[in-house]
Image (tube, rainbow, N blue to C red; front, side):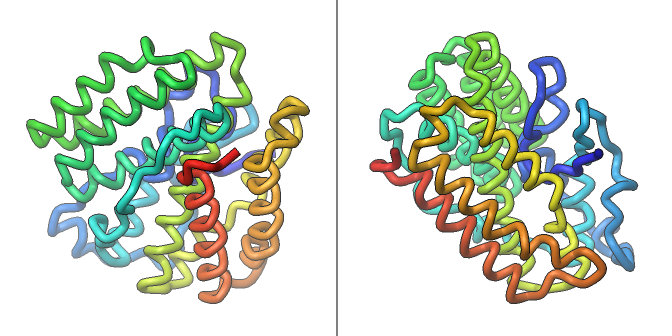
Length: 284
């Protein structure tokens, strides 16, 4: 079975995690000529450059966003959220929050918001410290700030990608695979929230097709089931399970028929609520 992932890869080893960062990783700013190209009749994710990771096929995120840009230029500044959220001290919440913050970093890079990128670089370090992997990202955090100061957006993207790799690798070395999975899920949820926001603002069936990821949802669901009993009983993991359950039938609309504007709106509402839950200080 092959799973096409738009977002952070669900289960990557340290050596392969660098292949993909978050739902908004590796975004390319289109030049005028590229934007002028005709939009494709349909989006075939299987044709995107990809790397096989066990049973997962990961399309290069920039290719997905290149298609989105041809269908209309998103207002990335408008997609940035006002608050990145706060560390509650709960390790599951911190891991999820770290994923959403890294995802936010890629959005901020696309928006060319230097101050926000620098803030995110510092927050990545703080959150990594809270889950015991600070040493893995000290140099990355400084590099992110430096690249943003120099408005080196390609470099900043590369450092954000590296930060995700380093965080997940350090967690896996500490036998915290469950937390590494939550970092991935946090980024995917935030990325999906942004994607549905963009699709809603200028709905086209080709854009909505990017949401058709039933096997990905099944994969994440299995990863949650495989977590420790303590984590499975936590409020956050329970809410993640409920979110996936609600989204699944909406995603399945892609089986032979288009995902409707109403379904896109509902997916956006559910993922937005999950991001809000992750980023609130009392999440448990």
